[in-house]
Length: 90
Ligand SMILES: [Zn+2]
Ligand SMILES: [Zn+2]
Image 1 (spheres, protein in one colour):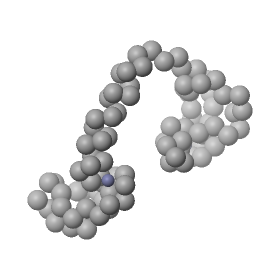
Image 2 (tube, helix red, strand yellow):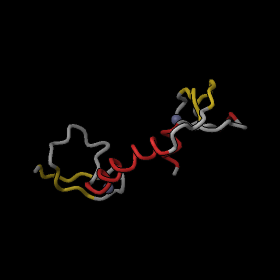
Image 3 (tube, protein in one colour):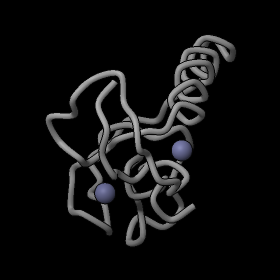
């Protein structure tokens, strides 16, 4: 185990031990969050099989990234957010 003083990017808990030496201290996750992200992510994607996606040429109001697909049809295109920015605001 590697000892240190890191911070979990998920819940903010202090991490003092890691089974590996982190190359970057950004995006570190404590054991709880690591397990959560592993268990949830694939389920969310596979469960709802075919979700209709709307294609278009929008841009994110947060970071300016291009958005080419949305799970809904946007009524107001001036305040759209990409997936990353959307998750940050939650
Ligand atoms: Zn955590
Ligand atoms: Zn964005």
